[in-house]
Image (cartoon, rainbow, N blue to C red; front, side):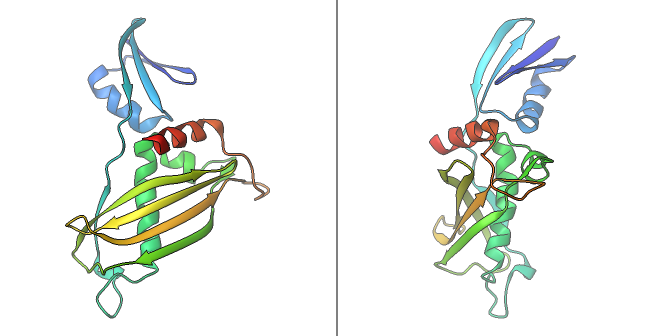
Length: 185
């Protein structure tokens, strides 16, 4: 059996099990939409659903002397959520964080703290794409406590730069397509 992924280009995968392969395709390739073809026939078109919030638990070492999440740790937790969120969109971790041609460093961060989270608290992080520029992307991270109440919000602005020059470069078109599709959801 041959399974083909149709997106910006056709990727041919030999001897691939459909039921096991779909999950691997969704987590392993850049995609905005996926159409599966088996022996040249359309199996069914699929669109990626909106990613669910990222579930986390406050660790002991996330807290300060007052027993609440230390303010700077919200940035670390937001970054962890981004690392989990991007692959759910179809951008593999290595494509974003270890690309040989470009990087996406932070340019600006800000946070609002509305109520404390404490060690052992379960919470969720909702990651949203707020804005796409020619060479930048702006994310918002809403930290929701176990009841769904907003505990904190973090915003980050990232700029695409060339690895060798560290100068601003346009966002790669495949990444832009995925981020724009996720922003529209």
